[in-house]
Length: 452
Image (tube, rainbow, N blue to C red; front, side, top):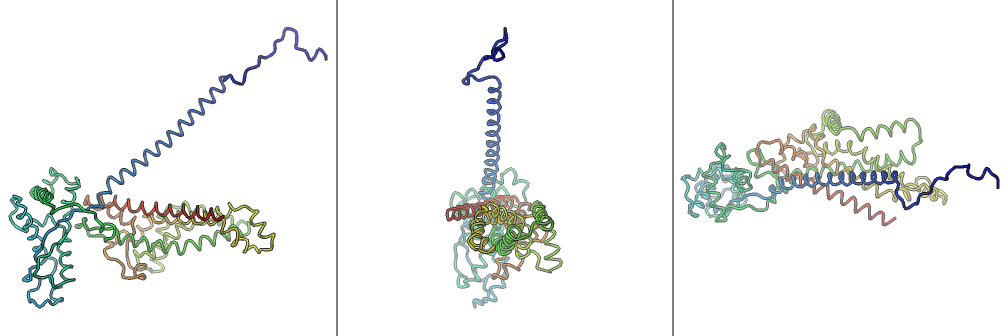
């Protein structure tokens, strides 16, 4: 041992610190970690808060659309007005328009008011028309045409109340506002209160909102989303039929068979860019190619499906390629090592293992297409009022129709507040469809993952 190994004269060794002692630098790191955790919890809490507010607003504003006010009245089908010849000739009965049935419905409501003993300054049956939907007369007429033998009898009908009466019972229309309203008076609201007490007027579940068709702006209480749901269904059939095989085939070729060169790199860059293109650009493309060039029918679900297919393809290609990349290279090498060809290795081993991701990406792309509105604006699916169901499968693809997001947009811009309520209700139905599609994607993914 030499002197060089000894400490210098007068020198002191550095004191050793215990590992159990927290120094200032460690405390600073711990405080930074605590702050970061607090920031993360605050961010998650803020996101959940806004989500609750959004869902609460949708439910609060849209639940009322699933209820509708109905008036139950016995209507006397006067043969002197509906069948003057008395021969029950269906062609002669069809000539009687709704203007001939409206007085009968008004008289029935007036009699119900008198029977209930409600005192009112409205002394004529014609004064009751503001309480009834314009569709009430057409409902009675359709029933009589379907069964002419009812003429001369008193038949109980359950007809729609006007949108103002419905809004009054849903706290959307108030008495102080009725003074400036030309569609209803305070005297009508007094009658409504009396008939509600007797059970003649009541709010009930509105199934026709889900299964019915759209109506004109003067009949918001009759409007439904059923025809638009069917239009979205036909569009999704087109998107699924075209985008899934084309997108998957393109992805398999680019990922497994295409040579790596500048041309394939250019294709990959363009696919990534197309996924970020605004949806309204695809609407302009659909208008120019499918309507103006190919002369396909405007507002048809076929055109909407083709346009949404163009928009969905980049999403499916990107998700499918990511699923194919996630398959370990050892699977390919093992298949090739036992004598399988390149195509057999891809279709028998790689593709089944990538199927969960492919299905998930496809369903997410379909869900995105289901909620798109901008492309449908340009091909005319917003300007069309979907009042009739298609006659068959061909007409379902080719006849003008609307779609759920387009119908919601159309209702939101109409003046009557009842349509605003229906727009919120349509959003609830649309969210149910989107949640269902995402749940299906999760189930399929887990099922295929368990298989492999």
